[in-house]
Image (tube, rainbow, N blue to C red):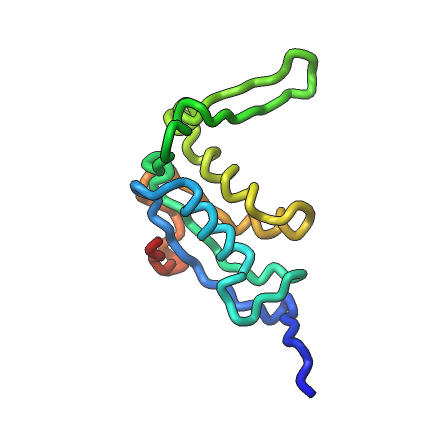
Length: 143
């Protein structure tokens, strides 16, 4: 009887991928990135091992939001002090902090805890088209 395949963290083979977010919905980009960061696209996926790949997302400032999300979607931060709540809508985020907006969307789709933080470190988001990872020879992904 064959047993279930369990990958070891030492045997994980990682690749580099680029996602161009130009005119793509934020959720579609984030789900694709989160799936690949977890490694669920691989046959050797093991839930308790970080077997995902490195993901580079470019053109984060050109990502699209459907419906009325540009004005209605809110992002909240709290300093921990009384009256320290800061709230911004998606329009302000995409104009001033497009990288943070995409990173938050992807991070929310990763597991909470030590494993999720380990996966999140393999995500690189850039507001413009150029990135500094050409030496890794990343493959382009279409969504």
